[in-house]
Image (tube, rainbow, N blue to C red; front, side, top):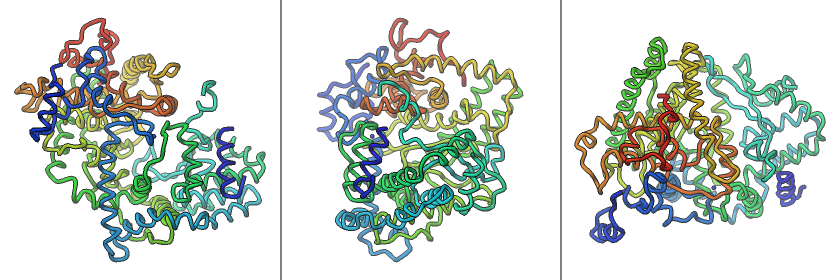
Length: 617
């Protein structure tokens, strides 16, 4: 009902219905002397014991000094990295906008997109004119077949209704690109929003595939057949005029950031109830977000020239190999896995492809038309380019060298179908510090554990372990080994089910299992790799902290931040990741070296009986 009211509001506008530390004085002296403060000491809260709350011990000082801005639902180190990288991208875009670059070059497209999106006066004057063609298509709908055809046209330009569709590798044959249809249709993030008290398939498929211009396929993978059966019934029972209003609402909402303020603010005023943000981001940041979404790799080509050198790329590429070797050793030491499964695990690990920093081969964006007609038209053109790019993959060999993230992104991923880890340059950024200023202990925790080890472990978590070395969905485990894995995984499910970050809202241990396994595995692998470094072997303290203490704190640094209750509630209901605090404190209590490093004793909050500790990888 809230969604329907919101939809009517936006249509009305259109004419229709997120231990031993230095004192503060010593830190100030460091700054006065021109020395950069230690990245770990500067964020600590020495009034908190690591045995009480390790997350706050490591990050509490920063949290106290950095309240959540009014335009955010949370404030974290990730935001600092993203803002730093956004400023770099803004500099690149502004330089391109004033460069008078030759037509068709990345600089021309980047510059025209940015300058047109920043021209708020022109956006207000145009109003809904850039969308009129599509609003007229919606008005012309008279029956179900024309409705589905219109949905197809809208999906091509980036407005999505009824269900989701995409082109991806076939789970059972990773050499083939498949076309998938999956459920969609709800406007809130998860079904729980509709239930929690406190807060026909063939006909659709045939009609949609005809108008989407999807070719070179002999089958379609349907994720949830029951959903499409129910949708078929709804298409017949709900009046066409209601569906037309839904399409108009989605169209305007999806392009709201490129439309006049009255539309954009209506959307923001609704979404802030989910994010907790009190005000919108500045226009330049909203523009950069949209620009990275549609031409991020184009921007990335210019970004890496300035901000990610070969020395940094080699450091993290070598770290991948050190952590890969650590997992190989740990697999050999497992007492619950049979040798036959171990041999296949070794093969999968050895075959795992690494992509570090940025692509060796860039996409060709020459046919993406970007000009100065309107912000909306640039988005339509870019979204249409991406639609054609993805559909054209059907019937062609899988390109295993392609990246699905931009080099400047603060993120990383494991792709089971490619059996690969992808680590963009942006994920290695520690805001305010150059890479060479960071000691190995901090980096092995911050990047080695939370990113590299985490993504490698995803290849062996509850989902990733179901794919073989070639990326095919294929069982390579003995029945006994599967049972042993599931038994250990259930211990982790139970552990995280116990956590209650917000009164009445527990972490969903089953939904977050894969990420929790990867967090724990990443830390364990990082430890083994770090133990082989000179810093660990020398054992010298920095700022009163031992190398192993700095390692664990480096990991916790990667999750520094805090969050509003509204966004926390949203994530607990919809996110497969545990809240940041529990991504630190949760796995720590399962790691023997943590107890030794910080002298954690029984009966303290950070102590977990050995019999209850998770032991998987």
